[in-house]
Image (cartoon, rainbow, N blue to C red; front, side):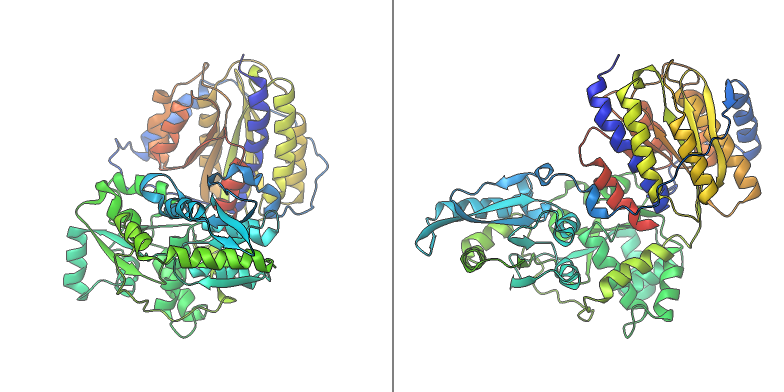
Length: 561
C-alpha cells in the first residue's frame, strides 16, 4: 500500500485545484493539430458504447448536503513563502530581501542577478556604520504581486520583469516606490517561424503586433500566448493587443470587438513559458510569445524570427511598503551597484541588453486600466462558452482512512470555486464506477447534491482509472447532444496507476476522436499513463507532489472564470 502520509497532503491539494479548474472554465489548450489516427464520429460512438457496456456502473442515490457560501480569498491558497527558494542569502544582519523574477534569479544562464548580488555581498558596503547585504528570492512576477497585495509576505524590494506589475501593486493601494527603471535591458516579443514570417511580411509589408493580430483574426496565423494573470509576457501582450484595436480606448467597444475576433482564432493559451515552449516544439504553432533573453539562449528556436512588442522588460526595482530609511539606502546602493559596466557586461553575456534601441509603440498605460484589462480577458477569451465538466475521482483501497477524509474536506472547500454558469458531474471509481452526480447546472440544488455525494464517498478495491474516463466521456457526449454549445472537460484525480479495467491503449482512440481535454492530477512517479492521456489533446498533467499546487494551478486557472 502506498504511503498514506504523502497521499494525505496531496489529496487535500488535489480537490481544491480541480474545483478551481472548473470554476475557471479554462481550456489551457485545444487540439493544436497534431497528426493523429482519426476515426469517424460514427465509429467513435460505437467504440464508446462498446467500452461503456463492458464496465460495471452504478448510480448513487442523490443526497443533499450542507453548502458553504463563504468566499475564498486568493491569498488564502498561497503556500508558505519558503516554497520559493532563496537564490542568494544575506551575509549581514542589516539587509534587504528582494523578490526577483526567474529570468534573472534562476539557475545557470538565468542567474545574472544572483551573481551580482553575491558580488554586492562581498563588497563590504556600509550604511549607518553597519555592513550591509541583500537576500534574493526567486519568484515569478505575478506570484510576487499576489504575496505583496495580499499582505501574506511583503519583501523590502521587488524587481519584476516589467513595470506593469509595479503599477498593479500601486493600484491595489500598497505603498511602492520606483528606485530604478532598469536593472538590465530586455524586451518581449513574438517568435515566428521564418517561412511564416516571410509570408506575412509579403502580405502586410511588415510585421508588428498590429499586423500579427490582423493575421490571427483572419485565421492566417496559429499563435499562442501566456496567461496574463501569471505571465509578464502574457500581461504585456494583452494590453498591447488591446491598444492595437483602439489606441484611444483600450477597453472601449471597438477594442472589445477587435479582441473577440482575434481571440476566436487563438488555439493555445499556456499557463507558463515552459508549457508554451513545449507546445512550440510540437510544431503546432506558427508563432508564440517569449522574452528575448530566453529566445537568444534557446538552441531549439533556430529558424525563428523575433519581433519585439509592448513595454520593455527592463527589470525595474521598487522599494515596497513603508521601508525604514536604512533599508531604503541599501536598496538604492544595490541599484547603483548593479548599474556598473562590469555587471551590465555580464548581463549582456547572459542575453540581456541586446535590443537597447527598441522603444515601445504603445502609450503609457494607466495603472487603473490593468485590472480591468485582465477582467476583460477573463470574460471574452472563450466567447463566454460555459464549461461542462466531469470529475473522475479515485476511491480505491489506497485512499482508505485519512487520505479520503482529507479529500472530502478539500472537495467541500473546493465547491466554493464553481461558477454558476457551469455544469458539473461527478464520478468515482475503484474496481467499478459509480456515477455519484449526473451532469447538471451548478445551481444551489446541484451544489447541495454535490456536497452530499462527497460526504458519502467510501474507499476500497482496485484502480480502474480508464473505466472512469470512459464513463465521463459517455456522460459528456450525452450532455453535448442536448447542449452542443459548451466546452467539455474531464478532470482525473488519482493517487496511483491503473490495475483494473480498460487500459490506455483501449481508450486512446476515443480521447483522440472526441478531442476533449483530460486534465490529470497524479501523485508519485507512476503517472506516465495519466500524462499520456493529457498529452493527447494538449491538456495539463499536474504532479501534485508539491505543497504549492493549490496556488500554482488555482492562480493560473481561476482567472478564466
